[in-house]
Image (cartoon, rainbow, N blue to C red; front, side, top):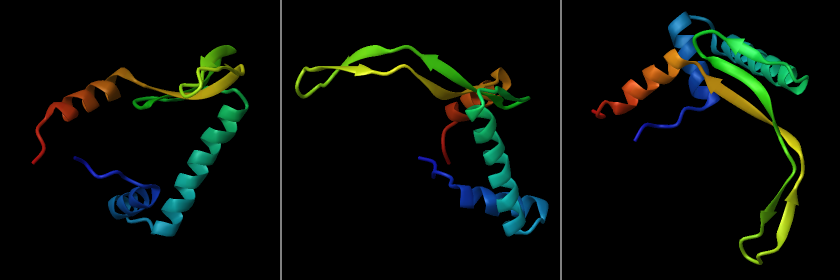
Length: 102
């Protein structure tokens, strides 16, 4: 099974690929993620060609059930962040995932 990658791992990899110092890469990645969070909070959609689209999806109020007690518990109306990957990205990941690991 593949190892999970953390933000620190991304910083190290990007710094190695670009020759940019790790502290500068970390600032850029954090600024990028901050812009996504800020724009999503304003209900804006962010489209990154070749990757995917970040957006908010509205969820209606609905009842749920506590599995331990059986009690009906209301779930409030809310917005949830979504990331829909583009077709090219999805196809590449699907092809890669089908390959056997070494």
